[in-house]
Image 1: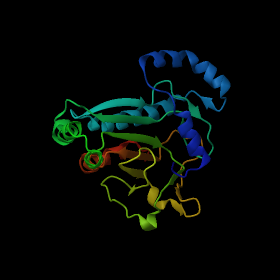
Image 2: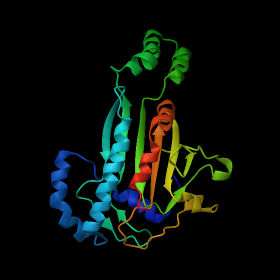
Image 3: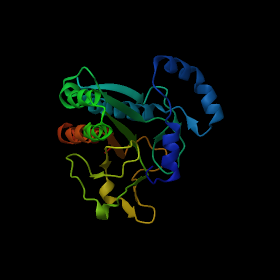
Image 4: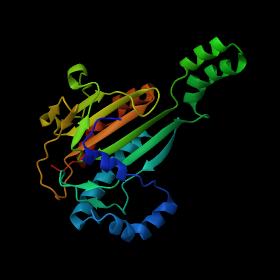
Length: 253
């Protein structure tokens, strides 16, 4: 897991509201109970709602371009109307939800038939253990995910920037390949949007510390952090083809 400050870890631990129709109904009923159990959470103000709705619309428009006939999409977490605001004093605006989508190769897709089926057919036709192991290593990864957070106070990087050149993805402030922690294989990429170039690198903690320009409890979003994990081929394709500049439209200027 990436090195992060406790505030960021709490943010991710709070973002465990799986989006389903049944849960949508239940969460509405549980809202009062949640605020009673966690008094640091409260409903957003009208001004905060405007910012959050805009952020959600912008990010949905970007993430929706990930959809493909080759990949099944699962919306694991999202920023919904039942969002609660945290009284985290370290950032202008903090909520108890995040965005995460996971994608798996469709077995009836052209991609599967082209890249996976020939290897699977060979695996099914051999009894040789060594050949099976060699063929298994040739199989491309069948899964990837995207995770989105905003107003991140610190972002851990392994390897550190001194040994990890910026990928220079158009639209990002900084972009790095990082140590994979989510899947057993594949790649991981962190994309930083906002004024991360003025952030302070702290080598002891191995993270960037962001410098927020707005005070606590301000209805603004100053940065967005996106992490991609999984299939190297698909992630590299997304880095080339997605309009990452559009993400900056979610940031308050």
